[in-house]
Amino acid sequence: MLIFHDTIVCRNQKTFRPKKSAPSGSKGLQLQKHIDATLGSGNLREAVRLPPGEDLNEWLAVNTVDFFNQVNLLYGTLTEFCTASTCPTMSAGSKYEYRWADGITIKKPIEVSAPKYVEYLMDWIEAQLDDESIFPQKLGATFPTNFQDVVKTISKRLFRVYAHIYHSHFQKIVCLKEEAHLNTCFKHFVLFMWEFRLIDKGELAPLYELVESILKC
Image 1 (tube, rainbow, N blue to C red):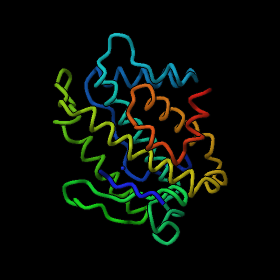
Image 2 (cartoon, helix red, strand yellow):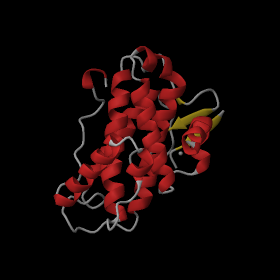
Image 3 (spheres, rainbow, N blue to C red):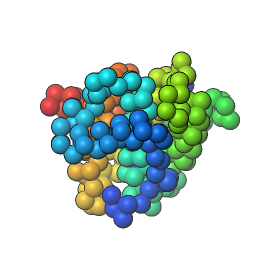
């Protein structure tokens, strides 16, 4: 089994965490409207592209909030099925296991159940999104020099939730009739990650065949 250290969600509209809003100000709202409009067209490849004349970091910020909300919603449908008893480790099949560390309160990676890992993860992402020194809320505010590295770490960890859902809970997703929503969200996520090179190829291994099929479409 490969162990990834962190150094590596609809039905009834239930969410694991309260939905986050796009960055405030006219620019954030404008970009969110662009996302909604292009997603509505059904062309996901077009939806992920940086709009002409827009700032890359602004685009990454708005989409990161959007992806957080999507995973939040998808995982929220599974909280009664993904428990410490059913999922004692955060895994993606028998070959991949993820351990948690945030580098601050938990510096050494620890083995935790899947729901505990997701709880730690969502708390950590919320802290990043709420930190205006990382995700500026005011129009014209500058992004930190390490902003894209933060987005890459968030993206990598959100992928792990998708990997766990597909490997451990896909049949339940089918029973809940949520598979079309899950597949669309994941396709959107993968195309965006690939467009901006936000996740290393090795991290995609647990869902490599699915990722390949999305990229070849």
